[in-house]
Length: 202
Image (cartoon, rainbow, N blue to C red; front, side, top):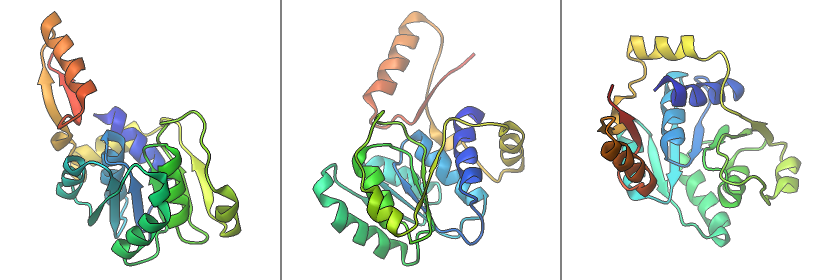
């Protein structure tokens, strides 16, 4: 679990998350959830997470998100949802992590983040996106890219050892190594549903 957690830790380092950084996270999949855990460990005073799926939002809430917001997949809803997200945060959104990487999530991130804030693109949902960069630039919103991680494992291990981060709730399914179980594991992961992290037992 250090591997996915490293992505969240690297993102938090790139965005300089700390005790004065209110954090919005777009996407409550595995990477969004580890980014939530990392942001809390780095001291973010308030975290709000956004997704289209009720189950994943409930997992985010159970992992310590201060608030959750369910959104649609319709890009026409961005302006209305930005207002809702800002209202739910109840304070300036200093940093937004887009852990999905779609036109809509990035557009929402750019619109919701405060002037002078940062949007950190973590998810790679699309190889190319069409997003409103000019209005974001006029508000001096910085866009930061994240690709995997670097030099994160010592801090990951320390967070896990100290109990500051508990990744065990993210492991929702376990399988053995028989041919049948391996196929079932990949099918379970592909279906989504209640699967967050699917692991093989050695």
